[in-house]
Image 1 (cartoon, rainbow, N blue to C red):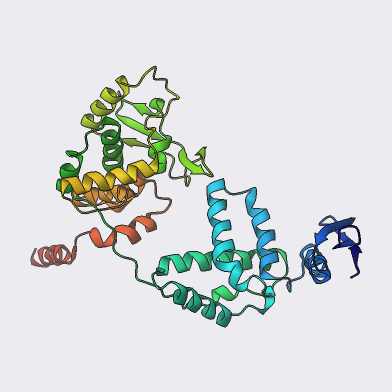
Image 2: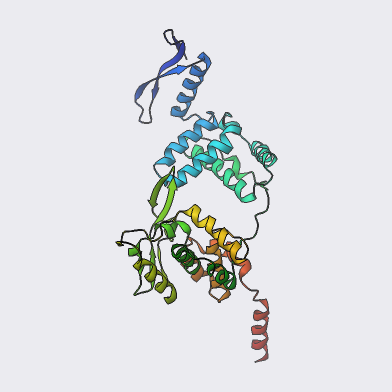
Length: 353
């Protein structure tokens, strides 16, 4: 693999031929390397990438994987995936040949993560390892890697995730009575009484609200990436839904909408930022004397209210837009009352008849 020196710039470059994915001969030239070794390593990795060699570095495979994901994922999802790989994974195992990474490698990798930050939760560690597994699955499927070592490694143990936080109805009433700005009152009320996600709330337009049928159509999601506002498709297929809302919330939205200047159906209903909603949630919670919760916990509060009112998991799942009822059961199972005594009572009745 010859490399060449550019005498005028005092740098190195490589120039070579390779076969692309269609089997065509292509020429590649890459300039600007400070060291001869860097130019040679670039050529070696480039050829491995395009030949499908499973002994390329994990970083090279990750780049191929990210290139594949970029056309398929929402920009926000891609950003999260890319950030986790670049900040947490590649600095530790990026230079290792992908076929040399074993379950023991992953054990040591996770131990180092916990040593660097003992507050990492098990959920976060699973998220990080999930990205590693995605790269391995990609390599197995498209680059002849024999197996995915993540499937053999199950030793992910971090800080136990705390139970979900939520407000009871009384706590929420105490909180909302302290909120004076109308846009914030409407925003928090919609989140609490509908259970929608904050991104769904911020994507709502005036035309999504049907005051006659007392429904809200949830059909898009708001996100902000690199200071650019994005209106994206819903998180999942089930996230696209129509939610019924009570009359008092309809009246509040109607009053608020009437105060919006030159309001059009395509205008966003809530224009304050997500950070502002978070800051003011804490501000008014402190003022009202109720415990601090996250913005997303208003969604948990809605779910807990439905469960307290006796609604079954399937109804809660549909209202929240969960893709699978399993998500609902795993998240809120501990809130459902124990029915063992009821079962015994029914069995007693049957036996005594």
